[in-house]
Length: 141
Image (cartoon, rainbow, N blue to C red):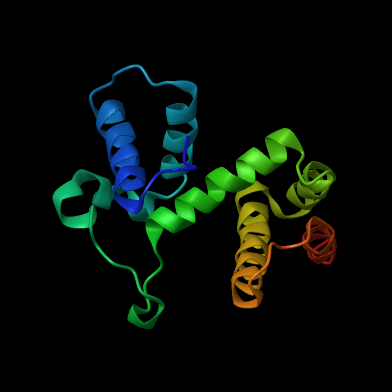
């Protein structure tokens, strides 16, 4: 769904999911997943009521603000990794961590490793190694 999506389209999708939820309209399975993630983050829910303001809002690191759309998208990416168990072994790592730390805390721990791995890959101009990624995740246990 999100492969060839630009920032504006991705954000519009999130706004649409929230609008449909507010109007009690039926949601597709992916929309249900996104809604669940939004519901886990009440600190972001107000922005979904103001698409005009936040559709093009920049969230630069030097501004000191977390990009809520990136954060929610990382949750979605992680959910996809766990559901498909790709890279192989991530589901077991996730399950073990979740037993100890709870689901949401575990997701945030893994997302931090994912973000660091992606950043390193960008800096080095190459794809991140699944083996390296899994090794970093195993250190969380």
